[in-house]
Length: 203
Image (cartoon, rainbow, N blue to C red; front, side, top):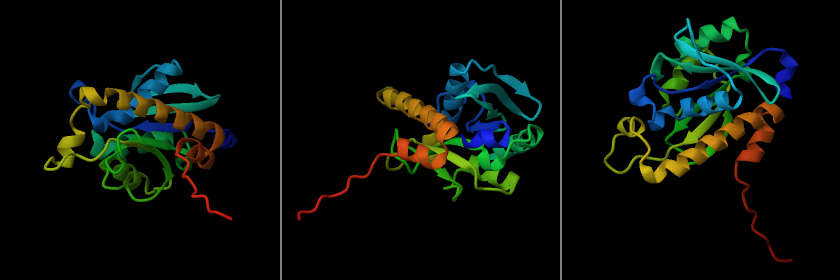
């Protein structure tokens, strides 16, 4: 298990906006995933002095610190950077979980680094740490309908007909995190991402 080699806890950050009015929004699926991980690992959320809620837990025998920044999305890095330093976690081993408009609803993709795709939470963390090569678990929430502003779309709740897809999204994301902790990113990608079919040719 790659994280165990460092002897440091793994920071797992779910991105979202604090407060009940935002709780069910598409933009808050990152919060939903770390809430599920904490519940399954019997971790308890406490208010951290660095404007975050944190839960220490063990997932797949790996010590983790689950984090929900309470700074609002575009200032997420202001909460993450101090916690990272205080628990002496490795930024290269950090996992950030966030919504992604460029993925169809229900799809989950794992990647290391790359551009922020316009996601202000990811950008804030990259800017605050001056580091971008952390692991990201991208959660597909789909594109907004024609004429709907993307910011309005992510700040709206999943309609009733998408509740099952949302549940599948959360479950797949939790499985992705567990696979990363056990197997590392590359193997987790192979387990989570769909296998591309290869066209057969005649002989």
